[in-house]
Image 1 (cartoon, rainbow, N blue to C red):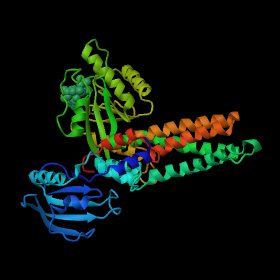
Image 2: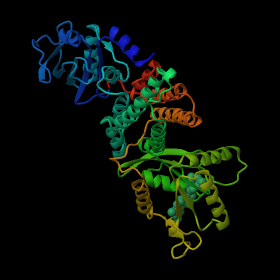
Image 3: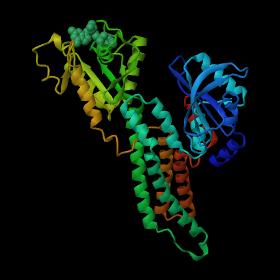
Image 4: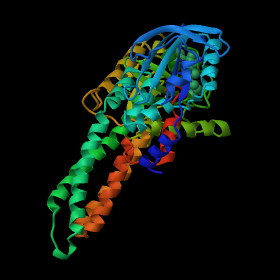
Amino acid sequence: MKYHENKVSYLREVKSIVALSTPTGRGAIGIIRISGPDCLSVVSKNLPTIKKWEPRKAILTKFQEANGNILDEVLLIYFSGPHSYTGEDVIEISFHGSPFILESAINEIIKNGAVLASPGEFTQRAFLNGKLDLVQAEAVGDLIASESRSAHMIAMSQMKGNVSKILEELRQKLIDFAALIELELDFTEEDVEFANRAQLSNLITELKLEIQKMINSFNLGNAIKRGIPLIIVGEPNAGKSTLLNRFLEDDRALVTDIAGTTRDSIEERFRLGDHLFRITDTAGLRKSNDKVEKLGIERSWRLMSEGHIILFLIDPLTSVKKNILELEKDIKLKAPSAHLIKILTKSDLWNGENYHLDYPECIEIGIGSGLSQIKSKLSSIIDKTEWNGNSEILIANIRHAKALKTSLDSILKAEKCLSDGSSGEIISYELRDALESLGSITGEIIADDLLSSVFSRFCIGK
Ligand SMILES: Nc1nc2c(ncn2[C@@H]2O[C@H](COP(=O)(O)OP(=O)(O)OP(=O)(O)O)[C@@H](O)[C@H]2O)c(=O)[nH]1
Ligand SMILES: [Mg+2]
């Protein structure tokens, strides 16, 4: 089902929804939100003292149960539709944050005709009522989930409409051209060309570059949103788990002097400055006949290919230079685009020795030293990335990246048709496909099941 059909079916059966918008559990206050066309009548029995609903004014009143019992003294605000988050009439009621009070109040409101909201349903209604496009609606979810300043910045930029604006500009250019080509189809007898082919070819080149740039930005955008993948690798006993524990300031991983202690990978997260990192300790790399250890080592190699940054740990006291060089070569082959940071471990055991001749460009770490150098290096790598946090847009949503890819494929096909001298009909078909994929990102054109899957990832009450 397409967006407009979806909207019609939604408007036909719309009911008021209610949900707790603050986290469950005890708190100073708990906010219940109600949205829908009959929002006022749904709560009027519980709030009998309110005679006049003045929008956007805080009202202190009593919330009463059906049997007349006063459940709580509450503070509420009424937003009259369409001037509300959802575009419908909305009431937000602040209760004292007792789970008993909040549950009882929700039950009362449901008894009076509202239904419990499903995840993201408030935002879904905002989208269906044209208050937000789909990219902005998804940004609301990302904003709530953001765990670092950089993830927050991406979500804010998306919510402000920066991504939507660029997509809309691209779409508009394509629409103009597709329309001209389609006009030609009405005049096939006369053999006229409304759409200048050289201009179309320039436009296609421009769109290809723009879209490819956005697709490329997904790697970094996704890393920043979910946590930048940082993988610790090296030979057994190099000190990998020790370093993980130092990053986390916790004894998370087992550390022993037995080579092969870590068998399965261990993933944790930590924040450094504005960024969230996803750090993984891995099984030491060596040839092993042990079935379990072999599986762990295979996993270490697999994880490397997904790493944005790889910390390669070398214990110079026990390592053989030739093996380390080979390992480094293999790591670079496995993860050609990752940043590799080489680290010489256990420096407290070899103070005074100059291992830098054997292993140049390494950071040294030992008991109680070296961690701050690694952290500065991590920060400088991220700060040097092409994204400066403001002007450039970053694609951080896999749905957007996939739709951009589909759109690029159609544009490439249109380009081929153009160079083959194909008919306007075929070119316009490909351009329409590209437009449809671009339109699905902001929700201009969207299937029903996709819409549900977007909003099902939200929390209830948003
Ligand atoms: N003196 C000293 N010992 C260290 C240092 N880092 C690690 N060790 C010791 O080296 C041994 C191995 O450390 P781990 O952190 O378990 O090494 P690993 O790389 O995780 O080893 P596997 O899990 O077997 O691959 C332990 O006995 C640690 O206490 C260090 O900086 N200085
Ligand atoms: Mg270990």
